[in-house]
Length: 119
Image 1 (tube, rainbow, N blue to C red):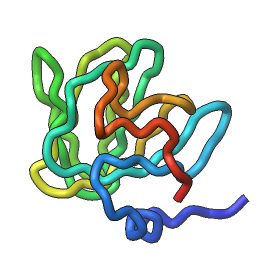
Image 2: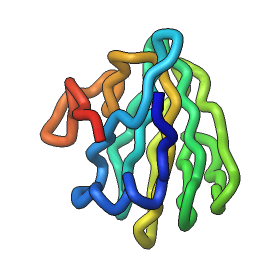
Image 3: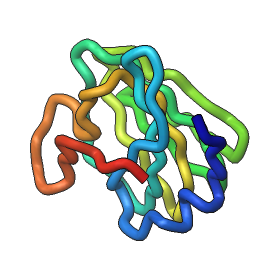
Image 4: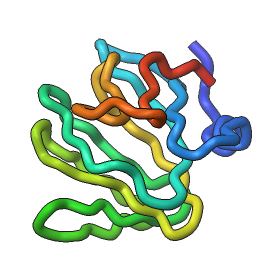
């Protein structure tokens, strides 16, 4: 059991849209990821997903609206809700979701990370 320094962990992330596992508890994973640009539209069939902005800001695009998230804010996207994160500038985000959740949800492409590495 060790403490986690988020700034140190984020300093080791060099690629956008590649989640890294920072911790696990009760079948859930805490993932750290850097966003920049627009991600793909997707949804998760069975998993809810929490996005917590650690540094920066981004927009969460839904089919009927756009929600801006700033540093210190979080949102839970319920399973089945189609969404896509969009970040004009680099943003640091903590994700909390069940282990095995694919970052691209119901789609598979070059951005899909099937087994996120620990950080």
